[in-house]
Image (cartoon, rainbow, N blue to C red; front, side, top):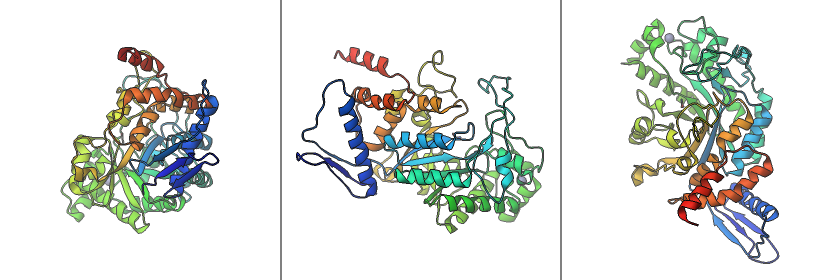
Length: 443
Ligand code: ACM
Ligand code: ZN
């Protein structure tokens, strides 16, 4: 899986790129392109009379997630995002396609899904704001557009993991087809961020027919091995009150609503397996028990990770303290409004996916992922600003093993960021930090 690459210009008349696979050669090409760019644009003259780079990734899975539900991004913008992650040698795009505030993928059997728009969006932070913008927000990808994006990504050796959220974060689906919920009526696409009580009814067989139909179309569109089913943040209030959900629990001998969630997730996993897909979900797919074959995308070391490893699941690490790029990267006084938290460049660089794990547990870690939730990110420029340069820090930890060297990373970022300038990317200025670090090191 790890495809070593060699870029060799140590003989005078040729540059040779060798790799263990097409992918290896592709990432080698990225390296060469970046070297040539530095040579062309450096204020000092650079030449590479003889050079040999031998290199391979630390992890086979290097992921980046983009939430296209809280704010919609066009196909052109998605392609631009793919270019951006590709330049950082990220090889998996986790495409968050459904959530409470929007359903973004055309499903032919259920045309209403993409008709649902939210009427407006909250202005400012949803924790305290009472103000709304009065502007309807929608948007979706047709199946033809999805195929186009899949082909675009494939040409760049980027795999896409589509996410269809369940059993929670389902308000947009419930607004289109109210029979999917326990109450059966009264749903709207929410204008406010945050977790909603209304979720898919786990008692109705029609819910599973719907989800299997959706996943059939999704697996027809995405020719990859992994499908993400969300699983996070599913309140159990409706299930506790719903006669159908309670009946399901009795019929299946389930002792709690958490076990009902487990029933839900396992039923979907079996369906995905019948389509030759492996299920991925957030930490909470562990709730009430999980098969050993599922992959846990773990943002909470305390909750999901331990029990997933004890259960024998493979894990992709995305600890929110290091990998949630919707968090502030500087002072709240000066940074644009963000979800919360504090995740400066240094913290992104300090990602240690093996922290607290023994050798055997470490072998279960397939890779790492960073995430961009977009409640507060409405444009691609702003998305770039949130990603860069934290994505470079993340990418180095994803690609390169060992301890890392932050001052050295900052120094190299000076030249790497010229690529950002050339591409016209927005990014947060890291130079004041680099300058003050240099001053403090006395160099
Ligand atoms: C998540 O942060 N709700 C996956
Ligand atoms: Zn129900």
